[in-house]
Image (cartoon, rainbow, N blue to C red; front, side, top):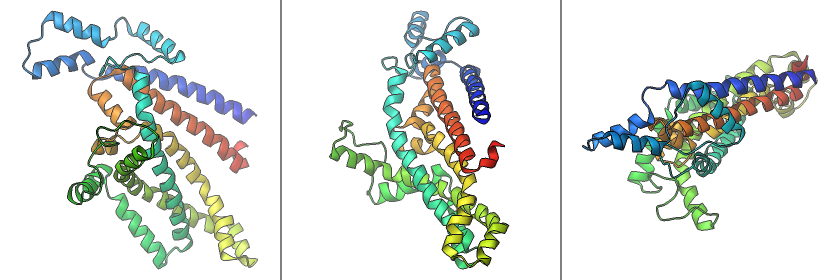
Length: 327
């Protein structure tokens, strides 16, 4: 119980610090939403008058008052789950914008992360068990090759080959223009077709980390005395590999997997930007570009809370899997 209470207190303290940084960091960025809007008008050749400047400022709802008063209103709005209107599009609320983008990211990045973890972990177990042999060399070289691909470069390569040259998949977007998002089979099949290339990009670039992590853990675990004792007792090789070595080597990967799931809500800015995928990562890029404080703060808050919650759950799960942690 003391262990759980300590983790809860640490979670709350870290959450407060993250919320405070979430308020401060966007305001340290150079420029403002008003400056960005005026720059767009100036680039089009229009002369901006004081009346237009005041009208744009009123439309954007740019923050006023001291930082302390803004911080207080910021905390009150968080408690009430009110994030205000987006500076980028004042006709849309911040919560509505995130609500529309979140399902796309959850499905794309979430499913990809789970599949990459399962496949990479199994390959790492196999490579670690067959260390020094041809199977280990093949898996290791393949993982090294995949790790050398930057996500944006691999995404552009897949787009050029499979979308532009072969015309097998769509070049951009989460679904074809003219369709209305729904749960109908036709729309879902269209959305799946649009998600193949970004999902493949994320899976390939993240697979190597799970492979190397699990392989190294397996090699270290295979040198333990209890594995040698199991081999001396004549247990089957499959039993030793899965129930003794892999089970204990999996513990560090559980922590990394929990952190990866916590980061799912943040999406993938580079990959979603390359494919113009309507997820949270693409929304975050637009918010930063337009100095959209309310949208940025809400997105950072969602990402922070999800990451801290994942760490909290992993701590509890790790203590369950390894009782020595509670001592």
